[in-house]
Amino acid sequence: MTFRARLALVAAAAVALAVLAASVVVYFVVRNQLYGDLDARLVEQKKTLAQGPGMHLEPYPNGNGFYLDLGHGPGFESGGYVQAVAANGKSYSTFGQSVALPVDKHVLEVAKGTRGGYTSDLTVSGTRLRVLTVPASGFAVQIARSLSEVDRTLSRIKLFLILIAGGGIAVAAGLGLAVSRAALAPVRRLTTATEKVTETGDLSERIEAGGRDELSRLADSFNTMLGALEESTRAQRQLVQDASHELRTPLTSLRTNIEVLASERTLPAGERERLLTDVVDQLSEMTTLIAELIELARGAQEQAEPEHVRLDLIAADAVERTRRNRPGVTFTTELEESLVNGVPATIERAVANLLDNAAKWSPPGGEVEVKVQNGSVGVRDHGPGIDDADLPYVFDRFYRAASARGRPGSGLGLAIVRQVAEAHGGEVVAERAEGGGTRMTLRLNGTGHS
Image (cartoon, one colour):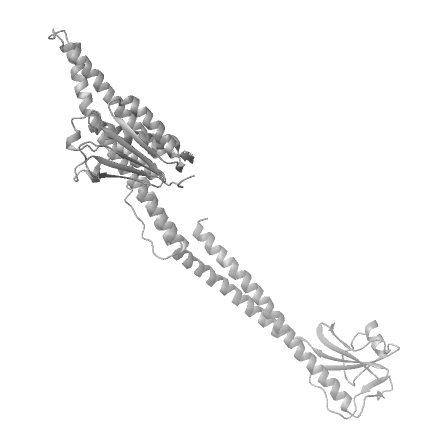
């Protein structure tokens, strides 16, 4: 069964229960009203008897017993019965009355004066009667009226209520189908879009969503998810494309040099050593490039648990390692105690990349200034600086300024720094420093001084 059908069925069932409950309430309200009206008429007849000349017993003309004479007061309505019951159980009906009302212990209790009047329902000769029993001068007087009219009225009302309930349920089912169709329209659009994306792989598909209800928010969330997937796929394709482009040149050069070394021709003196040196350098360059590609991929996929980290201590360790690798550069530090929340290994890699980039651009004997405060790391070199036209792109993957193309490097180091910054809710910026050189600042979601 489809969700739409289940929704319509639930709506119909809910309406059916409501209509059924309402029908039962209406039936009993009407029944009580009809019985109340009939009881009022019986009470009125009792008053009529009390206001008349008085009831008494008269002998039948044939001398066979007595009958109940109601006197000369007003008569009863058609369908009424009157019977007097003595304390000994003897009953007396009006003259010509063919129906004898049954006498039980409750009627005798009224006749004896041990019980007050009451109302009851009886069935006599297949006819249902409403009977009012009241005490009167040593007798129990029973005044009865037929329930046939009341029963016919209740039967008609019951039939009407059944028809109304059936019609209401049918209308509810139809409305349930219509409402479910309208309500589930966004779900159908979502399903269609999902099937289309699955079939075509086109992540540019979007769902038209309007309003502020739950289904509209679901459609918005689905569109947001598709947008994120589309951007992620685009970035992956761009990374693969850029990586293949960057790898093509060293691979071509490496293959050429290896083919020359593997050939049988005689090489000039020193040429073999130069080619071997080139092969080693090219392998080192490719190793660095592949390692940084892996670092970028790992940083985009891994979600390590963050922890509180002393940024100043991480920067101090990174400076010491860079000093060993770049002995020709002087590093000066100003490290204030600073606590951040993040992944230590990735933050350390980002800081190391900033230091390595600054050292690479520093002249021999140059100085690199490192400053840590309030959850940020600032690195300033005294090199040639970055052209204004290149500043917006220095953190892009594989971007290399014209002045950097003759230097070693993959163009991925600063891209890793930006990735780490964004993963920690921060940013990294580059600017031309006053007096020359470049200043790069990595800001993380720091908590300031501890």
